[in-house]
Amino acid sequence: MRARGMQWAVKAGAVLATVVLGATLAWIGFSVKPGETAAVHAIDLVDSQISPLARIPPGTIVHDGPPEGWTHLIFKSRSELASGDLDAVPDWSAELSRFLFTALLARVRQASPHGGSVHRLEEVAIGLGTRIGEKDVIITTATQQGLGANLGPIKRIILGRAEDRLNEVLRVARTDAMIVFDAPQTMLSEGRHQMVVFRYVVLVNPRDGRLATLVWRINLGRDGSYRPAPGNAVLMKPNLLATCALHVDKREFTAGIPSALAFATTRLPAGDPLELPRSLQGIVWQKQLSGGMVRQLESALREAVTFPTRSAAAEDENPRVE
Image: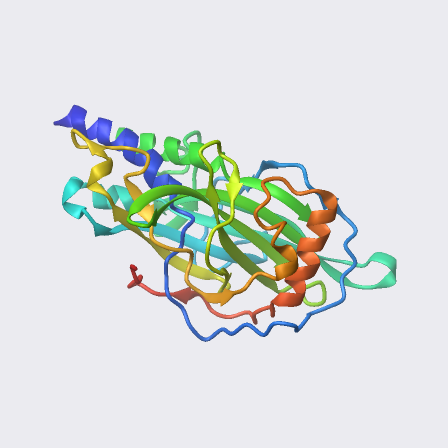
């Protein structure tokens, strides 16, 4: 029984970590007003080299707002088994599915180029954490014991596999006011779990430092190529505290052991739908972006969104599953 539990945890750690970025809360009170621009912005820095997304330093305490050294909490998400073939998983798996959280943070700096004052997006970083005492703390396999998490063998395996998944979250492009990154996801689509990519775009308002975060789905071909996916993008609410509701598919279990497709998110993070500009249809599905594409992407998205006002953490303890 213990060996079977360990084997299940090894697999579960990888597949649960695939979907931790898919926040699936419903939230309200935020509208999109296309055509309103926050500031005229000259795009100076363009970097289209693909690289791993930055990591939040271990030991960082993340509660319901940005921690010290950061200006924005984009989201903080935990996963939870919520629908589908829940009887296919052991009872103790529920706690393992939610002991880790994922946090996404941003740091905006005020600069004064050419005698003016603008806000620049210095960094966007991601990290995994867990509850240690009364604090939610970013950890890694190398630091968890020293930070006081003292994880048992199964949880250490899950953390290690989750870290492997974070290595697949790639920064696709950046400018001084935008960062684009891709996160692999397992998603329920047409009755089956499929691997897709969620593309996130984080934009800063150069005038006042507010952030807008967009996300849309990209389908994957058998060769790993990027393909268009139906549906709108989502403009996320800021400072989101989320629960990612997972769907379980018993067809993806063999002798009780889950495959990489056993758990899946059911939709994009809930929020306000945003139709991507037609001028970007040849760009938003591209796996790699040229410098010109990056400039066009930022300019068009900046025209399409209204930057949200800063607000208290958005939270819903009853995620809707569709």
